[in-house]
Length: 483
Image 1 (cartoon, rainbow, N blue to C red):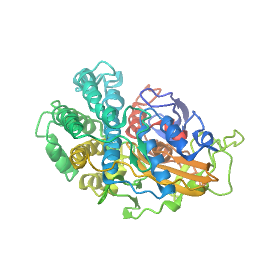
Image 2 (image 1 turned 60 degrees about the horizontal axis):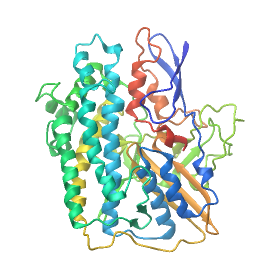
Image 3 (image 1 turned 90 degrees about the vertical axis):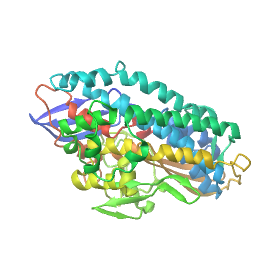
């Protein structure tokens, strides 16, 4: 048995270190360390509740809108304010703009460049993949970055700037949309859709969204040459490298549901435990400190009563990240979790065949692009420029609130308590906190730690490329992990 310290990882937002215990051919166990602590939950104490709208987006520079929406929802819960329909549509558009940008960026800039590593130089597909996806130099970057930049113009119109917009409020959005702006928004989304349908998929988004099984996906892939579009390139590599057998974690999933509409959420909330769908009871969420550099409590606490007091006194600690659990269960969050819980047939078929793995996580992200972009076009058309975009209400002196949303990387929750008009407690559980958590009181590893067990090691590797694929399949945002 030998030990490898993998990290720091490039192409990952924030800092990450992983200790791997290995034999000659595979990873036997893993310990995931989130080494950066910044203390936003402590910073917020004593502030006016509305100050949280300024502070929380600065937790992260790439998913700041998600933090804004979660914060606004928690404050709206405190204030008992209902968002008008325009506010719902506008919030959805801004959140989807960030989330879809993140999904696209992950695929092109974070995940696919690993297949252009020299490790794969002898593979028959290497030359084509290296040309297309080599980090900073591949032809994919040259076409994807302009499409991404143009798509983010929506954020400028609707939120003023990105990151750290202040347009998102408890009662909706402060930026109304004029009639002429709707035309421009539709043009922006339409151009992004054309990029997806030509470069990424090579097919209409409705075709991708209607794929109902892994067999359907395989048949679709074989309709054209593997090197014709980027999604087919990934599917070819997945088959060649057996990514369906790599990085399986708990096969248990959580989603808070996403994109609130007048008739309900576009993606449902719920859990998937032991092969069954069930309702989500957020009261069963706890944070365990057993292996973290945090002050210990006798039992794991619900976030509404949670504590964030850093200390190095815990001799068992190996990460600043807490260990969120749902009724003591390790669950995975992210695009795959959203689509499993929303009962999309393709997502369900993938996990029923091979569980949550590198292949299914990436496919779910791209599937979500095909599902959400057409809805964005519908939300723009549904905006009524003459109707209100934001409602107003008084802030109570004493209350508790909760804001649950879905960021690109999964379930994000904000819990806030105010006393005498000031923030008395503020707790955040981010997606990567769920996925990259350390062990808990029962010494059960977190999702990534479980997914890394059994990862193959090629001869002479210092940081196994399989570990890179597994880590990136979760798309970590380490700055959010311990905020």
